[in-house]
Image (tube, rainbow, N blue to C red; front, side, top):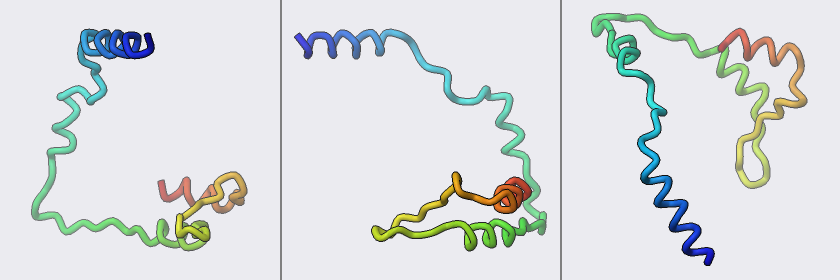
Length: 82
């Protein structure tokens, strides 16, 4: 019985039609426009300072950010960078 319900759900999902999750095509020219001769650079040093001050590594080697315990200054620095 469980298999037939799962099969029914899968069939209904397949017949439901495409999901439109991608942006509309008229937005893409914004990303395609560029100047190959540009020498502009982006300074990510503020981001690196923020990472250095807020990212910790647990015993399994997973990088963590304690957003819930972050100071107002830390939140402000993140908002300023973003």
